[in-house]
Image (cartoon, rainbow over all chains, first blue to last red; front, side, top):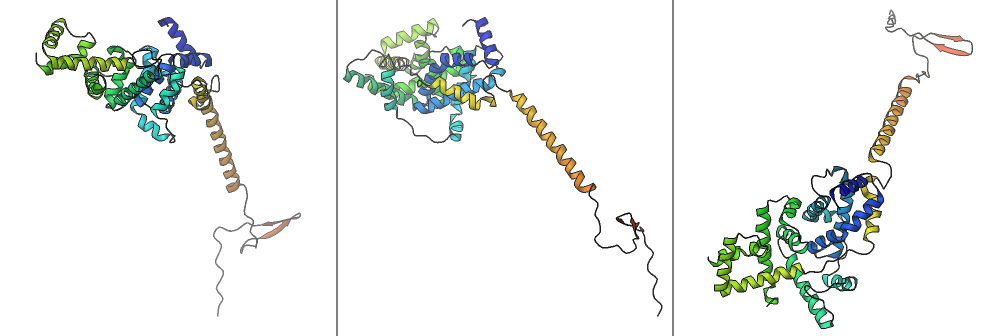
Length: 195
Length: 150
């Protein structure tokens, strides 16, 4: 979407155009959900947070002034919600949580791609891929929250340092140092499985 | 270059952010130091594994669920519905009407229902005007009754 198209699109959102909002959700639901899922490791929690992101977009769209791309603004909402999620989730009723294994098994059917680095077809390889993915997710979830979000934005969402700075409001130097610490910690945790 | 400095360069090296001089120094060190080379290999593999994680999508009914949540909770204003400003104005008007109504009722209760004494008041005069018995007027400062002489 080029800048002029985005301006028109934002105007439609500000006019509470239902079709525009559905288009917005369709476009951003997977990257936003994926970010929140990798941050939390829990599907249901990630869906709740992703829903809250889009509700916040709906409520606050009039405050969007176009100083940054719409995507950056939406990611910023997701980032803030993620960092305050304990407070947010504390207000929500407790729900039964699905384990990571259940989520992965269910999504294997939905997703066309598999494994962390290659296509897996044999059951033993599939189990191995699932096991590795579970280990990686556990290692990510075990990271300090401030480091984790930088790692997920950079290495999972494949964002530039500049975008991460815009989203988090952190200086580029802080982003790089947190990323370095996150990756080193991850290396330590995963080293026994990656030889 | 020592081991610590070499490892501090891993992230910049991986992301192609190191200046040429630092990159060459690191590559020379890695070529000569098996420990740091092993560390670099583990670092690179760990980052590759994270980057290769599958993209996980939300449930199929997610868009519909969010649309419904917007209808129910979004700014108390559904798609194309009454604006928040309109709702505020309506509530404010209603409150104002209620206050005025209460003030009017209070006025009626306090000033428009004179108390009619059940028994004649001492000092008041009685007379009839048609079918209506009228009581009054009452002196504001009635004269004290003369004392009886013993």
